[in-house]
Image (cartoon, rainbow, N blue to C red):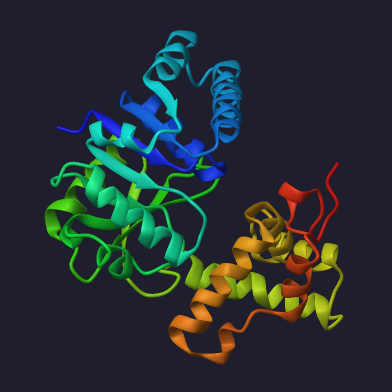
Length: 282
């Protein structure tokens, strides 16, 4: 029985994942090497839960219960007690492989190790462990507390029991798990990122302004936000990393990242998190 969830990485995705598991009644250990990141994550989760209470979607008692079930820890050894792991660190294959190798040593052999990666090979991560049949992808959407989809990625050696367990956990979170094969970008980002990249090409080539490109996609295609707004929300560095994974993994020039995207990232204009991307943020 799964009672304790380990979430590694206290960034935007990690704190959202920790929140939804705590809300669903699981004991959660949110681990990060940075104490400052853990403190910011707890503050973000407290504010998010407070908004749910204000909107009548959560009782004050349930908010307090969720916070009591959430603990933060910078010690990696704290993960030795968990029953299921969700990794949510930076989108870097070598960093993730090193982490999975370490998790393999620290956690119990029967524990399933999942990654929130949005594009990196699950087969590659599983090969860094002695339990590839218990390694899978569990790609949450941002913002995690609001978005109902979780992509479940089966690696080359991922076993059916691990996939069934992950699907059941999605149901307990009130989310829908959709299985995707282990190809670069899976389903979501293989379709989404080339669209965003093409929007950036259209801007670079003067086909339309930032506002015009976003307005066409919102008003003409009924998208909730334009692709350039969405890129800023995701983070331009993340968009670039995913495009590079698609290009390297599939070898097709149609996945070449737009030069303007590379320039923005090189300039530190990463979107909302840096205060400037395709739009300026106060």
